Image (tube, rainbow, N blue to C red):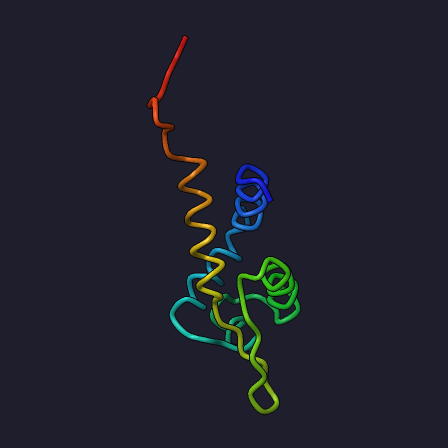
Length: 99
């Protein structure tokens, strides 16, 4: 995917505050749906919907532990996002130009 399209996809995912909070929590440790729901003060159903979007974007990885599924951050995806954002947001080799 070209960097501009990838950046648009990333920024769309990050445009929802709850998802940003979830990413922040999951960067610290893996959590299950109920723990995320309690921490974020939203319903487990809402958490599941946000997790589906994050899973589809390969941001989180699901790991089954007994009866529960725990979610953790996919660091490789976050690193790719950092590089994409840097490409899009950094000035080009000629710096900023205006006419």
